[in-house]
Length: 335
Picture 1 (spheres, rainbow, N blue to C red):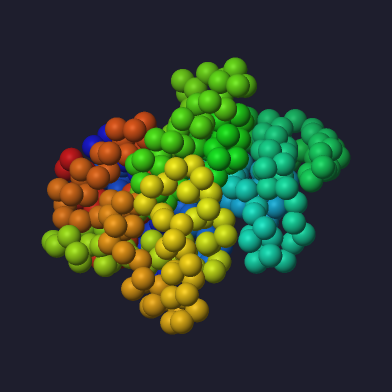
Picture 2: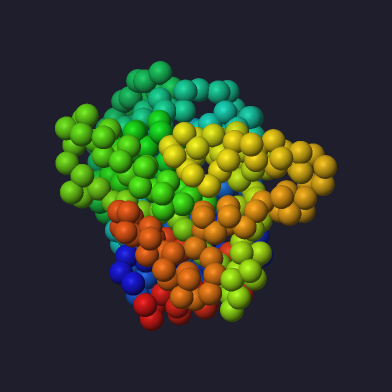
């Protein structure tokens, strides 16, 4: 299957060495993109992981999410240019909005997420030219900054990770592409792509070179039910107290048909009653089936194809469990 990538970063049991090894296997089996998600749950950091993955691979494009404002734009640009040098020009970045939840988690003052994201992208692009830069925005401001060496490339792609309508519109206006969120259905993706196209049209942008990629949670087992159960926590985690505020509502407003308003209170009650396990048990099969690619090998292949049918160009596959990783890579290298 063309346009397949491999995603990692969420599994606490997978070391950075494991990630690099699996990424090399994915590249050897024809995967075109490797992606690392830096998460609010404080899993491994993106810079260390991407450096290791870059050394283990030779051809595939490599990217990662990084929430803006957690790193100064100067530091972020410096790091990105260094990783691009290390990988000989194979890196892209996915700078994500710093939401209220992120700000509270990391102990930083709240700022307008769209404004901070736009200003950070503008500032980083200017810095990556290698020329002296001064930037004065409402959130980002600095004088006379310049990379101390000539970067390998003076333009590194920035794909905007987006879930909400606001984020999708911003991706269409300023992004070199978009990274659509995990735990989303193909129906959501179709709606999201239309929002991006409309925003780009308002700006008079040509999307011929715009890259549409999506993280797709994949769970493959010999039985359909076993596959659903293996990825159910990944779905349930989007409704825990940390992620619920900036995940469920925005997805529903874009048009995610599998999340029902009346279920939100049930999920919150389940968490309050019994934490993680109760929340897992509260999430119905329909949520898992609708917002992941899970099932037997044939079912998984068919489900991933549905994302491609609505306009996703690169499906970045994220295994539900470590023991599934090799099987998923083999399955899609044969497709």
